[in-house]
Length: 445
Ligand code: NDP
Picture 1 (cartoon, protein in one colour):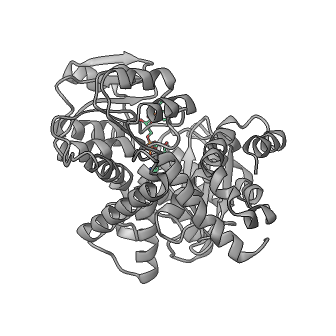
Picture 2 (cartoon, rainbow, N blue to C red; picture 1 turned 180 degrees about the vertical axis):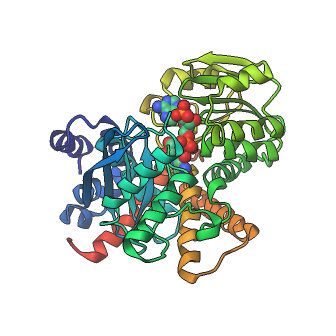
Picture 3 (cartoon, rainbow, N blue to C red; picture 1 turned 120 degrees about the vertical axis):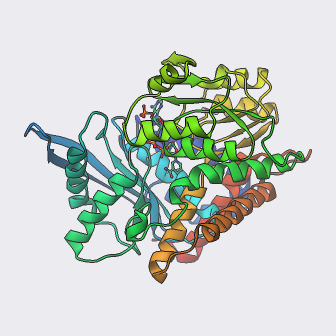
C-alpha cells in the first residue's frame, strides 16, 4: 500500500469531501508500516474495502413547521463497517451535515469502536436539520419524519444509532417512540435513551467522564494523580463539554473556558459546580447562549473566538471538527500546556497534531479519548439484551476499565524508541489490527 496512491484514488472517486480525506489520511499514515508487513492484507485489497463505507442511505425528510409550511431536509446513514459487530455510531443534526462529514465520522467510529473491546462496528448518520430556533413540537415532527425512513435499515442486531451534535436525550426519545410505533417492537435500537425506557446510567456523562479517565491514565505516566493546580480550557458547552467540566472540577482542576458557536467565555476565577449548574440549565432548559453566562458572572466573553490562546495547562477540545489549528497549538505550547485530550471528533487539524507530537506533550486523539460515550452505549445494548439495569457504580467502573484498556492498547502500539507514546499511532494501529483480522477471517464480502 502506498498512502498517496490510495488517497488519490479516494479523492478521485469521492471529490469535495475534505474531512473524509483528512480522517483517512491520518489513519493510513499511521498504519502504513504495519499494513505492509502483512502482504496477505494487500492480497485481499483490505485497505480499499476498509476505507469505503459498506453502504450509504440518503433520503428526503419532509415535515411541517409550526406555521404550517412544509420543510425539507436531507437525512443520511453511513454504515461503514460491521466486521466486529452491528454498525454503531451517533446521529448528528446540524446545518453543516453532508455526506463527507458523516463519512469521516463513520470511518473514525469503526476504529474507535474496535478499541473499546466491545463488539461494535462503525456507522454514523444525521441530517442538515438544525434545532436552533425550533419549537419542541417541530423537533418532534422532524425526528418522527426522519425515523420514518431510517427505521428501514436499523435494528438492535443490525445498526444501533445514538446521539451526537444536536441529538440528545430529547431527540433520541422522539425517534425511539416513532421506531416503536412503526415496528411494534420495544428493542434497544437506539442508545442514549431515557432511564425509564431502557437507557443506561452514566450514558449522558460517559464521553466527558471517559475523556478525563483517559487523560488521567496519560498523566499518571508523569506521576500526576489528580487535577489539583491544573488550569483547564474546554471548548463547546454541549453534552461532552459540560460533563467533562464536571469531572475536571470533581478532580480538583480549574475550568476557565467554555464555548459555543457564537464565541467563548474566559472565567479567571474558574467555572465551579454552581456556575456549571447554571450552564446546564442555560443549555438544556432555556437553550440559551454562553454570552448570558458572561453577563451573569461578569467575566470575559470573546465573540467569534476560540479559547486556545488563553493560558492553560490542559486543553480539552469538545465542540467540533477542525476547531484547533496549528497556530492554536503553538499558542497552547507557548502557554505551558502539557496535555490535550479530545472530547470532540477530529477537533485538531493535521498541523496542530504535528505541533503536539513535535513537542512531545500528552496528546489523546478523539478516537481513543472520547470512546467512553460509545462504550457506555455498548453497555446499554448489553443491558437491553439482558433486560436488566446496572447501577451507576457498576457502569462507571466498567467505563474506567475500558478507558484504561484503551490507554494500554495505545501504549502497546504507540510507544516509540525513546519511550514517548504516540497515542495517534497507537490508537490507529490497535483499532486497525482488530478490524483487519476480523475482515480477513470473514472473506471478501
Ligand atoms: P452538543 O450538540 O451537545 O454540543 C456541541 C457543542 O459544540 C455546542 O456548544 C455547540 O455550540 C458547539 N459547536 C457545534 N458546532 C460548532 C461549530 N461548527 N463551531 C463552534 N462550536 C460548535 O454535541 P456533543 O457535545 O454531543 O458533541 C460534541 C463533540 O463531541 C462532537 O465532535 C461529537 O462528534 C463528539 N462526540 C460526542 C459524543 C457523545 O456521546 N455525544 C461521543 C463522542 C464524540 P452551539 O450550541 O452554538 O451549536
